[in-house]
Length: 487
Ligand code: NAD
Image 1 (tube, rainbow, N blue to C red):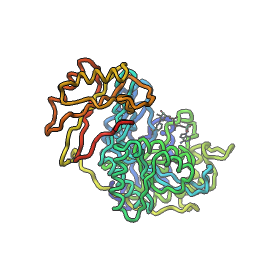
Image 2 (cartoon, rainbow, N blue to C red):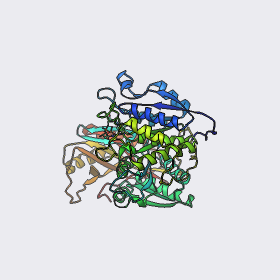
Image 3 (cartoon, rainbow, N blue to C red):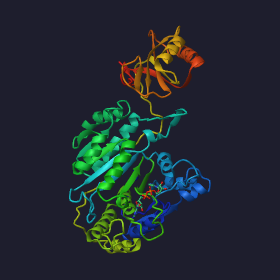
């Protein structure tokens, strides 16, 4: 985090207006912040559709990356990836480039914004891991008809996001932390976040920890959202429940967010570029404006943050000059009229009580490659993933023959995670992608390089394989999952 700005200091902030309504909502936000006396010097930078069209495949030119590197804080509008220009999203590239590992999404009932949940007192924050999990983007077609996406989760990745969630809870005076995972099914990956959470939670004595399975979390968010204070979760889970939660309090036009890392922080509205209404003086700038309020708190300007936030609350509460997405039917005003009204309300206090915020301080992570050492590691076997249209028993007979005379024997075959050989009596549909589990016939110390090579050579003489996984034990504990039905 950057240090709190002394009252008179000015802070340089990179401004990326982005695409579509980004242009209007950024202009609106800058105008309101200037009227509120925010001591920010904007450094305008480009990213998005036009940049892709110039042939820059990342969607963000080097000057933009350099600007964020220097200012370490950015306000960003929505970015589009035009079809036919690059496969990757500029948003994801910016998040990964600056290792913005924490996505923070406050979800709060706003005065005057009527929803089926109004009056329930929803005031929670979702802290989503932002760079690991399925979003590492490591994907393969394993066979022409079977696809795989690697779900990578790491201990420091889990610890960082959990510490960020706890630091946020402390900075905002929050008292409950719900860690939400799918650890009951993905015991190794999602289970890692749960285990690190359970290890760390006792360090934070003033915060009550709980674990909630992600599907139940989605259910609870709809049934009783007011029970939550902070929810911390992995990338894919957080992606889904944070949009769900935004919907509870009024939707995309008012949902702010931040992306936090050790090197930089980027604040952005949750919504996209809304091309249907772009340039029509119809966009609601509240989401970007509330993101700018988060930015002001991040740079230590709590007073201006409070002033802008209260002016927004008063405007929403009084319900005059609201944009079409939140105005009562037939009373929609334009973006410009809304901006003028918010400016007119600067200095007024709403009936919405604000929480007291303090600086968010995070432990710094080393830039060196992280490594977890163990006292013992032992090879147990090898999974060879094979493409085959044979029936399991025929395939197994072929693989047993291939393994004859090697250090490994065939233990079982699974198809999409369910054991299909030896037969369990189940009724699995089968595709041409088999996990073929070989185990060592006899254990002896060593790395088994030549034995593995021999098995792979013999299997590949007859079978088309596409990937191999070592079955290991670290400090005596299995480091692999069993297939459904495997014993
Ligand atoms: P969108 O958020 O742009 O629009 C969804 C709906 O919400 C539309 O009806 C839109 O008019 C409305 N809406 C959104 N923001 C609004 C606002 N501030 N005021 C009033 N109404 C608003 O989502 P989409 O249509 O799925 O995406 C459009 C483009 O934006 C796509 O190219 C997508 O990739 C991109 N996108 C970017 C980001 C980002 O940069 N963070 C996020 C989402 C989508």
